[in-house]
Length: 226
Image (cartoon, rainbow, N blue to C red):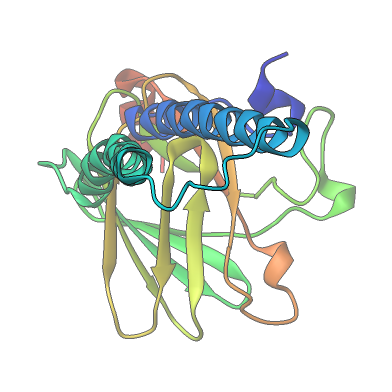
């Protein structure tokens, strides 16, 4: 079982999420090196019995411990800035889906191919079938084709919600009167789950997001039958 699976997180299913995981590993490696060096220096200073009472200043060591942290910050900042730019960039989308938050469910609109609209409610415990996830399954899933650039338009009809799918590395607030947008591409088929990440009321924890990634042929057949 992978590290993400141990913490009940789905594996990354988009290039954005894969880059986020790589950056997490990169930052953790640098953090481990910094903590190891600082710990070694601290133990060495506390355990040795050497003293030098004529030491007044140390320009060389002060220069070193000023430059080294700056280099560490550069190694963290450069990939972070590149990743932030990629997360906000909206590529030429092949499909646009509009998501509208309500208290407490989501509704979706497919307006590119046909005028398709539906609401997505969480399934009750008596509606869950074997293999379904409690508090995450919905009666209508968002169906998205794989290997396709998708733009998601996100807004709200009442209070502030947040459309979040961790496996895709996307998260955007649904604000009344405002239209936010995110872009992503899914690189493998599967069902991916998310939840509203804003405290939007009494049933905040009962408005999940269920997204199903399928092949283009399956997606076109789904559009024809709905």
